[in-house]
Image (cartoon, rainbow, N blue to C red; front, side):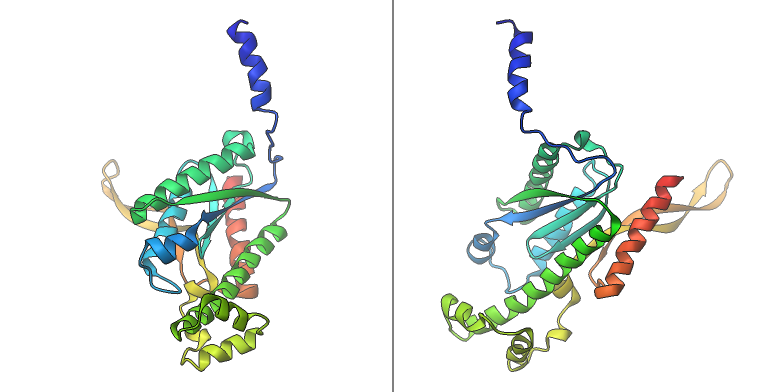
Length: 259
């Protein structure tokens, strides 16, 4: 069989499972650490329930994903997961899901591994969303998940510090209301409201415009130029205020792409 015929035959199998995200739909990619429970509890000596070194590695990885060739306008990190919002017109790899998934997972895994000097891996999924409201709902959902995870993590580790086994703690926390969990922490001299915002709400990474002064050798004078820079927001607002922040990011990106 000639190569051209064999190539055509085999590529039909290779592409048989290809899916594409339709034009104009928003693309959100969510990456999750694979086996990170073992990584954080056994392989690395991290502070519990939150460790600044782990947080910084997640931020570094998120920033890398936003600068590795895709048009990503918002990154969000909490616990061991990263969510990325693509610019709607991004046509990377023809919007093929298998390419987006494999490249993002590979980039995240390598960056995070280098950041902590140990092997780590991420999986990835693609979520297509048809409108801005659902985009905002998605990130509100992940922020609420961060809040619930933080409350549960603090309760879990405070009880473990008292000598309870993992199964005993899980049983004790099962069915407890949010109020009861807050009271449990309060009895341990922890006011949940006073904990760092990044632990409870996650971290947002997005672009802002700053003015920088420089010298123009042609005009021989000092000039001001606007530059887009990534900022790391560890004090994300809550509820409606968070929705407003996301809406502002979407609006600025829409205006920027109209000119």
